[in-house]
Amino acid sequence: LNYLLLGDSIAQGYGVYNRETRQRVSGHWLAELIAQPNLDEVHSLFFSQIVRDWFDGGAFLYLFKNAEGQVISFFRMNPRQVLVDRDELNRKRFTYNGRVYYSDRVLHIPGKYGYNGLTAKSIFVELQNIFETSENLDLFTSNTFSNNMGKRLVIDATDAYQNLTDEQAEILVKKLVHNYSGVQNAGKPIVKRNGLKYETIDTGTSSNQASQLAENRMYQTKLIAEVFHIPPEFLVGNVPSDVEALYTVFANQCIEPIATEFQEYFNLLLSPAERTHYYFEFTYNSLMKTSLSKRIDAYAKQITNGILSVDEIR
Picture (cartoon, one colour):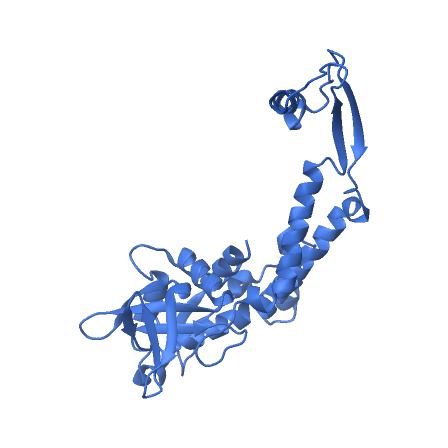
């Protein structure tokens, strides 16, 4: 969910701009390349993949060029299969599937955790304790519900079967599970017959954690949201009324730092001559959500004070 949310948010707005006029340049090759990285992938899927790679240590993009040397396609390289080192001239060298490439063919966007000049560390390695705690909590929740919150059914078959074999006991258990367990059998009465006796015991898994699963999971959700700088409301679906402030925090603290690094590396694809006149930049206007009532109130004040006209607002 995090990667989809971040990748889609970053990919929503971008363009190449003129440095003097600050106006977007229509039809620039770099903007068109970002819009369609290659013939197989749309840019929203492509960005979700490379954002995931970035959090996992860094993204590697193979640059496919035409005869004139211009980049016409991006292709994601599996970062777990890329070996990065430096040659005798101190150039960064990338070995992938037995072939060696340099920075003229590979755009390396390293992650922000533990970058040493060659590679960076995965966020899942750097913050291992947080993610392990989250995984353990998921396992605890699953086990708790699987064990009926600490209560287990005991079948006493000593009176019904004097010499019950392991195979017969297994058949008996499977039959009871099929007939009486699961959501589809909820509330279904258990029929006692052949001298079978039923009782429940507490397995000891019922604890303070079991009674506070919702609170524990909510805390862990907030902790994960803090790691990715995502407002927790986006993950739990509890969007407050002040949605404008929420999206502003999301854009400033989460999207902008990632997008800034990506756009700085994409600008390296422009030739030195082009960089004197143009620059690539992501925009976040589509993320800035406001309520209709707040917009109308702001428009009314702008008209009253002569800041905007009706036509400008329209």
